[in-house]
Image (cartoon, rainbow, N blue to C red; front, side):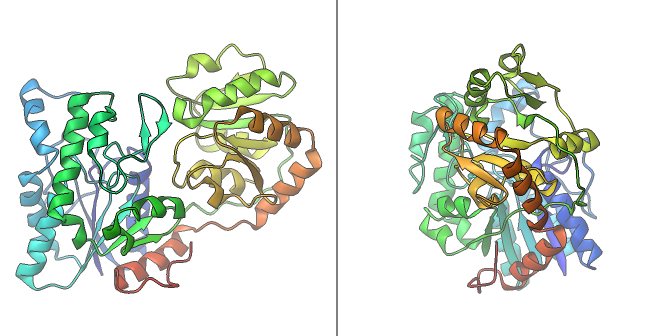
Amino acid sequence: MKVLIVNKFLFPNGGSETYIFKLGEALEQHGHEVQYFGMEHEGRCVGNRVNAYTSDMDFHGGSKLSKLTYPIKTIYSKEARVQLRKVLDDFKPDVCHLNNFNYQLTPSIILEIVKWRKETGRDYKIIFTAHDYQLVCPNHMLNNPNTHQNCEKCLGGHFVNCMKGKCIHGSTAKSAIGMMEAEFWKRKGTYKYIDTMICCSEFMKSKMDSNPLFATKTVAMHNFIDKVEWKETPKKDYVLYFGRFSEEKGIGTLIKVCKELPNVQFIFAGTGPLEDTVNGIKNIKNVGFQKSEGLEKLIREAQFSIYPSEWYENCPFSVMESQMYGTPVLGADIGGIPELIRVGKTGELFESGNGEDLKKKVEKLWGDKKLCAEYSANCKDISFDTIDKYYEKIMKVYQWGGEQTDGLYAV
């Protein structure tokens, strides 16, 4: 099978890029041919045979002249259609697997795929993996960055609320462009050509399904995680938070609780805009951003980890990673987080944003080492999809598209 993976960034940039690289590798290992389409960039590490890519669009840099054309290019890209057509004519894929494409590549690429399919008479699938809420929320987070409140006003296609709330970088102009982009493609009905939309949590699926068109196409499949060797690791006396230090991650609520529990030792591993508020608190040790062996050691030796997010997380890797390393998770009851924790077995939940509830749960777990040990032992039996299992599922998606979903996609 020939699979064309489409993503705006073709270099290591975030979770969606990790996803496409690992998925591409797995497909190739199973004998499939894989090529990629997206923006050109000096760090690009995958590509296609004809070297066809769109120009790099840098919204935070670039010349003043190039920025003048961005409002139009973020809605519709003739360049993306022309360059993609070169790849389609040469590669002749059986599946076009779309990932993040809005603004830089634009949904115009879907029109070119459909045009090519019609002209060549080829029967192939258009698959889309939703890494965020972009198709139902122009700022992709279902969260107003000005109020830091979760927001569902755009659900159902009411995109004017994006401009009203200045939801994109707090800018009326940028939010207006986001609103126009969403409205333009809604009215053209372009997303009807997507056969299957993969959502990485049941929660995300429920939000995507607010669009009746999407509701007939969505399936829920949790993201995959690398297989981890189980190790019996002696625990140390600290509670771990690892991740970004930002408002939507619930850092403010967590710090407040830390101050109220001076006898509990916390370790924070990460960085972010609220780093200054983390430093200087006696029972918080900020070890900064950690990776690889250093982060693994911190996770394995913690009594438990906390995931206090206050926005609609989809399928947070950190929640899965902690349990795979044998450390229970105290997670916020929001978004897709509850789907990843076996409450009363491998961790517990607290009401997102509720400092009193978080404090009570921290005190409970910190004061009951035996319970934490039981939760830790139970983590040995937890099972998240590895790339091999995910490959089996996605091959069914590739083969069936939107034609058959019942009972096929176990999360």
